[in-house]
Length: 101
Image (cartoon, rainbow, N blue to C red; front, side, top):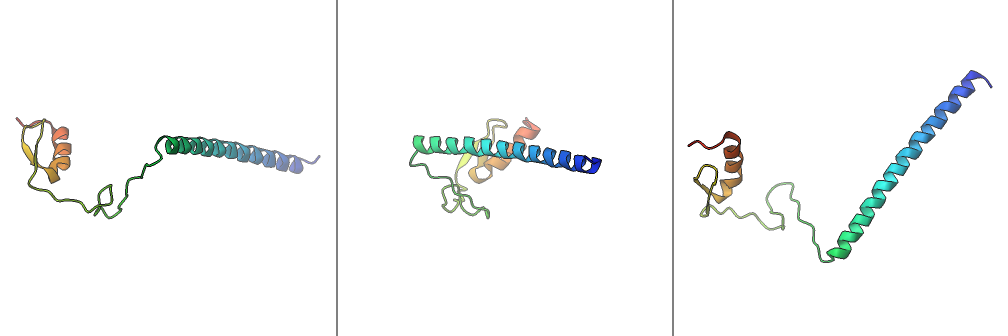
């Protein structure tokens, strides 16, 4: 057997092994996720997934976002009252820098 044929055979066999491994891994992942989805569907038959709005106009239920500025929450970190529509942004900044007092 010439060396060139031997090299082609090794390359083709190694390529086939890699393909088989990838195929097995993908099949395993798909099988696990399929079983998981079936179990979730059996456990929660009336489950509706949350709504995703790429524009950010609607909330997770598919309804228009409410801009409620009359509600205030007390920040437990700095003890200030923060408007409801600014609370998440405030909390992120406040926890990063710590209390000012």
